[in-house]
Length: 232
Image 1 (cartoon, rainbow, N blue to C red):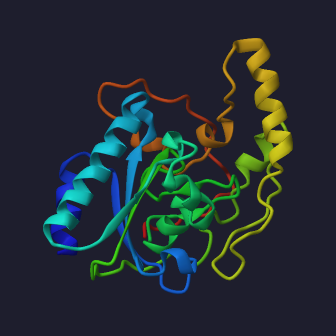
Image 2 (cartoon, rainbow, N blue to C red; image 1 turned 90 degrees about the vertical axis):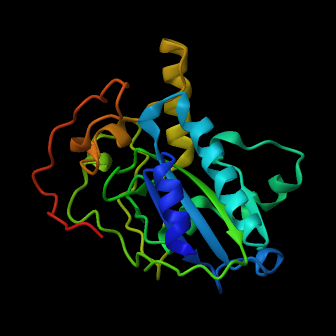
């Protein structure tokens, strides 16, 4: 069942699909749905990213419903709505947690999920389920190696340089107030609140190029000290 669902989602446009066991990770409110389907889409699809994520999430839900398993879709971060039942669950699990448990990537120094193929240029959706999915091997530690490009080039100095691991899952990676203040300052100049330099400069996924029909992102200097790391 797991591989059939993976093939279906990849064939429908997902950049990555992973299956996670969240046993011992989820809060009691969600522990009956101990597995997760994790879907990643290349965020360079721009305005199509969210619609594709939602379509893939619905496709996964239909698949699980057909197999008569319970499921609960967690909305993508870019589609969170207040005052819905699902909004009460946002603090209880994160897409990044599910993605690392499914082997899709690790949490980089910039606080973002780093996929070995797409880098931080990935948007996530998750479907919790009680289906007996075969879990992929989780990522246990950061694979950023010696690369500190995002730390050195962050215009707000918000990235601390700390390193994530499963043993130390909540280090202070980002000084959120500095990041937010910089984005708000940028808004006053350009009218757009986002910075995104920590995404652009990350070497992972940069050489893959943008999806067909989209503009390629600006290229950053290749890191001199980054370790060469094989794909997961």
